[in-house]
Image (cartoon, rainbow, N blue to C red):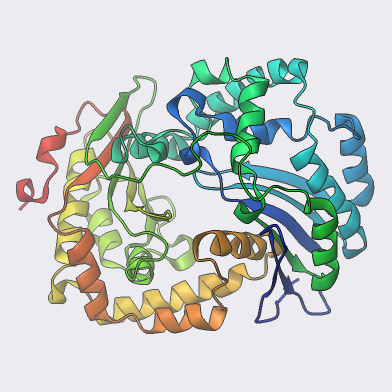
Length: 444
């Protein structure tokens, strides 16, 4: 059932700097998603404690001063609720999906696990094996693995280049003190946003936030560095051959745009234009087949699939493609992609109908996502942490409508044409040409 939301966001800032933001659903909605978005993720870590934010997320559900792990699980089950968390490179999120009558309890639980986790030494030791198994599972997911390798290549030596889970040696040595110090450094009120979407009363949520988070400090309680290191794009490569993998998995990425860049919306349109394609399901979702790159890729029979990505951060971004190819087709596929990117920087290389089609598809995708309260809540939290405001849907649509074919050409020229790129490759990649030969000048 669709759950359309009101077209405005209510915001209140508490005395300690904590922000409370809500979007009210219409009457037919019967649930609410509420959570805490924190301006802290893996890029805020140092090499020595890389992985601590994700480790801390795991420990949040292992018991607090007033709730055992089992007691917490039973309480969530009895409410018919869902409690979860995730860590990204820039944010840590704890959220609950529940019925409106249980918002009071949900807020109490969220505050409890954020502020009163036991961080028991025995539980920490047990969780090391859990995270190691998670790492094994992540590495089996080729897209996850290749994007981690790509970040390593694109931001070599920097915070964005490190993985969210951290290296094995850190997972085995992260201590209770490391976890406590991370909380004391980064879990401060001005870096936190309490968000809710669905059937929720804003004033009630403000009262609950004041009740549970009034003592959240405004400033760090440690002397550790609070901010992340500035992102610096490094056009290098990482290759990980695997004789047991029959396909070549390759991602190339160009230095993209941060969230607040004037190019962020044209890049989204360009991403939609490039689309995605799968040889086994070429019209999946109706996304890729109308566009030129999909036609070029499919004609040479040297690629199984590709997926375009456009990842933005506070001060940087990555724009590129992830390709899956037979071993003898990977170099030809990369050449096709690089040549196509270069062609987009010429007015004759951009079809006006493709631009209009991409804009319509992008708007439809954004509007359809409003049916998911969890996604809406995520957008509220992310936007307040990145823009310091909520961008209304009408503004998003207007910005998309304002993108012209000339803007797309200018954006391609700015970010793609004759630019150096980062590259990550995994699997059957013996046939992949040397990195230095992947430049457009070698494919003309």
